[in-house]
Image (cartoon, rainbow, N blue to C red; front, side, top):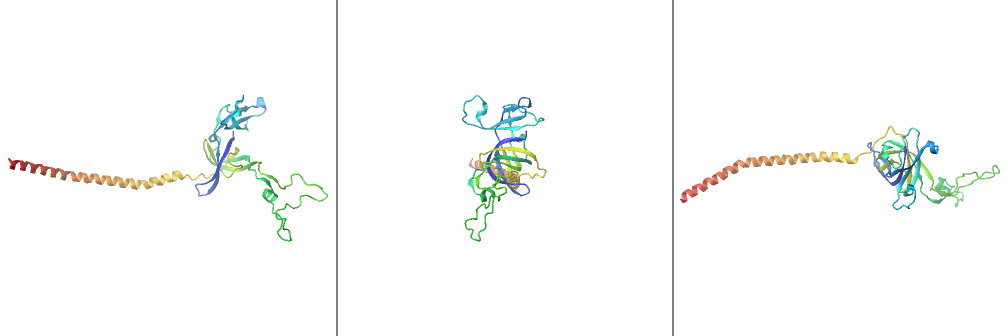
Length: 266
């Protein structure tokens, strides 16, 4: 199994061990449950149906599939081991840092857009009196041959809200709940995504672990302080030991004086 469902959480940045700053996207992957199995003998193909994003309030229906917001199928190879219905698919069992992935999702809807914004047209020149042609698409057809506009001509229209696959991203961190992908993925927050493993980057550089580096520096910083405190304690103990005989002698002299005073009084 090489795919899993995820939800886009947020975008940010991290640093690699070589000092490179990279953009990262945090993906939530907790809660991938196997709800159905497709077999070659019964369905003519092998696949696993995953349920993701369990609903808080689900309508009472006969099927357990109604309690999940998203249901997607993941094709399985004949050599793969089929999980059982009810199993939890963990991201750490499929991905590891350094894996190359493709992320598929629905892009953000931008509404109706012109050719310059939608297809990055250059627009017309500002000179020669073309004051109203700066963002115009220009001619859209040919002459008598073919005498029509070709199908799929790039023009103004609805922009976004399409299924988009961003390829060759890289996993920089993974656990049972989250994946950090190097790069940006389609859609806004809480968008459903399909994450598919396609390969491994042999030249992977891991993330800079700031916590470990800081802990090492703190240990190095605290070592001289602890040594100084230990030295001061030892010096204080030695001083007390040195004063102990003196105090004993003084107490003995005080006792001798008391005896002399009693003798004189008698």
